[in-house]
Image (cartoon, rainbow, N blue to C red):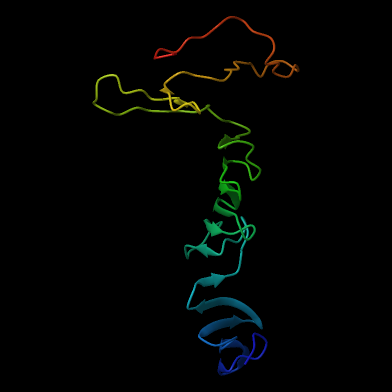
Length: 174
């Protein structure tokens, strides 16, 4: 059989059913197209999209679920839009399908910023910890980059060469 004409079909629906695409593999065809395949190495399905995820919950309303934008990317959709996206470099995007860093958060409209909560009972447990690992093996909780603080009430872009002063974070800076 084939996707267009499966070997095992359902009465009155000749292009939906099961077929064997190659040795040790089984495929499900729906409407004449392959929808699902199982073989000795993997389980495969349609890649899907944000508006119609490959793996989603049944029920009414706008679908939410998992989809695969490309061979090396995976995403979660919520309310028909990409909510969480992991690209082929391992960058994670929340609210963006083009993450430019390890973690890229992008929100538009009515958004209350980023909320981090440290619910630990340990003394001195930080909500955010930045650890610089140097090539000589010295591990220091020093912030080695630049911290840009800006307002959205200006048309100027953030210029990292302009400084207002220095912000120090505690720790071993040697």
